Image 1 (tube, one colour):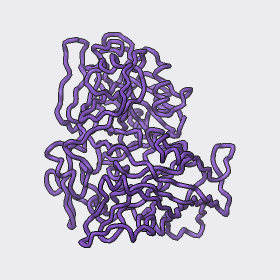
Image 2 (cartoon, one colour):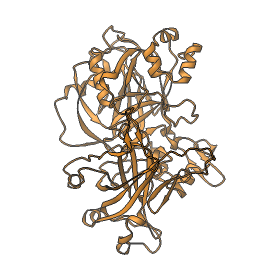
Image 3 (cartoon, one colour):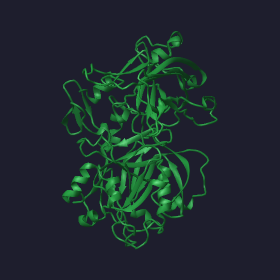
Image 4 (cartoon, one colour):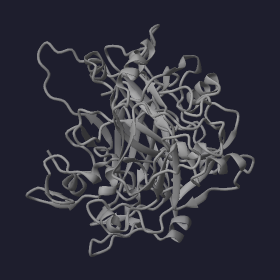
Length: 546
């Protein structure tokens, strides 16, 4: 097994999974047994057109590649859906895409990297095209999205190297490529149907397979944002009593923040002047701690971050204090926490079934009142900030079917606060807003009383461009065959690297103060929607909330 460092040094794609030849993606395979049945599959092919700056060069080669991501339309990436990975990944090497342009590119004689300057990027734009194909595609309805990775550091094997960076040229198979190129519209992705739709919603491919040709893919829109790198600068724990004089406990650069499974919120949403300190507030910094910054910028990470990095805060319409009619300014990026798979000792894998998430309120300040009182003041343009605040309430959303318009079940430990005010004034309004936020079916989004599920949770920040960052991630822990060498470092016989402790932050839901009461709240809806097989076994054993 390769290590993180060796993969960053030698591999741009997980070669055991993919074989890239002449821009064509071919699924790897072994000789099947004689009685194996190979399902018919499809090939999607067409022309990739790139319109943007000249590529960088290094060591006599064109740097980077065109990355093609195939998504099922029922399970799109954030913010359009909940997909955490694509159905297929295709790569068109830069040497192929820019083959006709190679004589006009600059290659430094010492092999060092050359990239066009900012003025050259604007002044000397080029348009090139080449064939592409995606193979071994099953029946379904898809979108092709993607980008040209100018820096050549895309690697789908790791969370921290999967998303596009600022300046990369994005696009896909679009229905409005001209308008996007002119900056008049956001991308609208065409739907590509593979096979014949069946009464049960599946898609059948004939035994001879299917070849869908002449699919146009265009990369022409520069990514406006850098990936939202962050660490938790300060955590403000929720107050535990209804005493208005009680203040939140502050924790600087924590590695773990804990809340109980039966977290009983002190104040209800209608108590707008008190509600903020009843929430778990996480203040994010848009860079790394000073002790980690130089490491983050160096090999093997090479994160595009500095002490002056900023979040790009954009207006995202109006929302409400959950369950009330009190208006709030809604901002992007979005922040979502998601339950981690307890079987992964590194805590890097999200729990797949069911998915258990919670959406935070994103704010510029620590007080929710600041959002409510300025609800009518729409900002004219994006705002850059070095900090953001995510406010989390004791609510979980359980999703057994991640496809678009699937069902969801919302749980909260108590329907009334310690001050005896409704935690949710209007359950229907809350269900409708959650459904809209997570692309769920409002008619199948339900609400019930139930304790938070014990375990570790990741924190995910997502821009409207689908660029994201997640804590914890691979930079915080040893990976593959790496072994801990000393405090803060991992290595093998061939390489060593320093870990970045700030990237290991987790939210942890601990045992309940009253486990029996939590078990009594597990009704049929919560059992069907929120509990994994391991949770069900612990529930039956009476240990789930202990």
